[in-house]
Image (cartoon, rainbow, N blue to C red):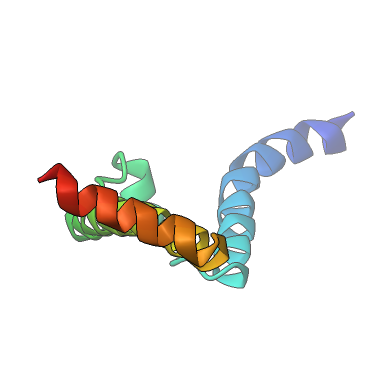
Length: 100
């Protein structure tokens, strides 16, 4: 019984550092930066530079998504022009010229 009473506090004290080491090992294995043990205990404070990069990448992603959408529309029109009969395309072009 006295051995068990000694092991319980030792286990309670060592679980935190062991889990921190395992967490950092998994983070570095998957390409993430390891966490500082002191920062984690103080609340961790978010990295402002990382947040700024995420915001810039999100904005760029939205811009590129819009460009892809417009390009898909243009490709659809070009595919329709390429697959339509020539006389029908010519009639539509003439109709557009007369529309102005």
